[in-house]
Length: 344
Image (tube, helix red, strand yellow):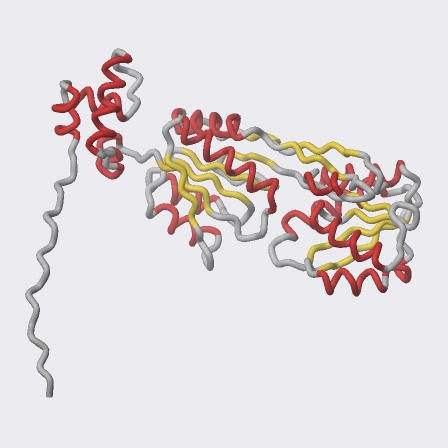
């Protein structure tokens, strides 16, 4: 038997000590209080710009970053804005909106954390969010109730904002009525002389939060106009679109509101493969006004959705945090306009 000689354990490199605010103060030639004022962007204390630059440079040189937990203890709350991750596919329009919001909040010295609460809903999810002690929570979609809002506020959240179709007691409401999107699409098709209108209903769990109000909007636009509205389910798959296109003529539709631009492009490709002419046989309109829709032939008519800018919403979050205890505000934040192109 071959015996392997024992090797001495390699010596570990000496661990460098974590830089502190005292180290930054010494390097910058200022007090620890000044370091705190500068790095925490305290506006109540006037500090010259050269001093601020010196402190920031010293912090960079030393690799120092403030301790978020300690700062929260001193302030009585964190600077964290929690954004639960949407539980449904949201598409590029909403991704861009949330990216702008995160950037604008960071400019106001908030740390944005997106929380994946898979498997948790409503008030149970609110308890999980509360464990992180955020200063504000921005909740997209539905499910949060008054009890969940109360849990968040008791945990130290100074503001709770919901982004959805209806108000929640105790929270600031950013109302998004998606029926207006369907109404604009339906009214446009009606004005183009279409009377047998189909509405694509995505066969994806969770999207009914958007698709059902859009369907009701189309119905409202066509009500009493000697027109019909037909629900047309579709999964976001090439095979499903191809099968729907094969059966399309039997539906007897002369127009379709395709829920959004992505579904519209999926359907248009399948319809053209079946020899169905757009818009001659069937007019098609989407929603979201994506760049790809302008590159299609025929170019895709769409409903341009107007959302508040990230900066506007960030300022609303900041105001809600600074005026905690004020009466919750309600804002309607979704607008819609039709962009007429060749597909209708």
